[in-house]
Length: 261
Image 1 (cartoon, rainbow, N blue to C red):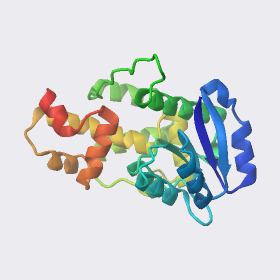
Image 2: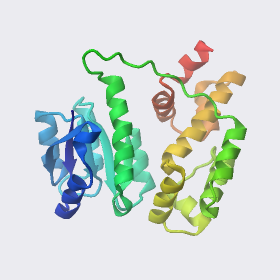
Image 3: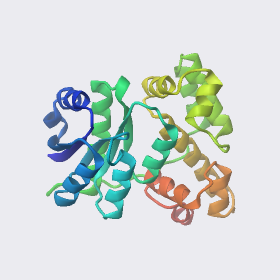
Image 4: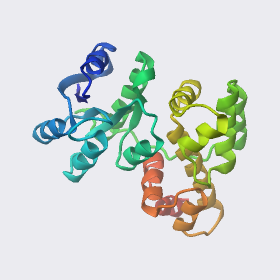
């Protein structure tokens, strides 16, 4: 069983998360809980959990600070962030520091939590396989053919979600934020985040990253452009962040990917 630490300052939310799902059925057990980041950090240092399910906005120490302090301590616990803000910038920072996913508290469902736990469970198994289980060989992300992207658009019937997908596919190299996308489709940020995840099965930031990395792979395979230039060409202004996201999604760095071709 993978150990989970639940960090949430609202008692009602904490109790709801505990009761919404049969944790053991997903291979997890709730090993502890905390009401703020400072309290949680002490628990993490004493007995590191496999997963920290953590609110972002909390008193004393917020979730982002807890994530950063955990990483500074060299503790590799997985993090899934809980938020009711739909704050794209906070999510970007959380992902940059290694968060596996985020869930909007206001629209959280059993399905959302099960899908997230399944994803994290797979990540944990691939990095810390149980005794007697062979670690699966990872496969690098390959560029998604344009006809498959067209098929995704065809399958999406919601007009605003379709507009967002089209916009990202065409403007991935530009600065894109949740605020700008929400303004583009004239909807609230919280609603857009939840709607996109519901209709596509992906978070907005994951879809944006996936499109950018697919474009980067195409450039690595078809041009001699330097890696940092490719990162900038697909929308990553920070070289280290580009390499980190590329490695997370493909299992290798851009340079290693190019050399292996």
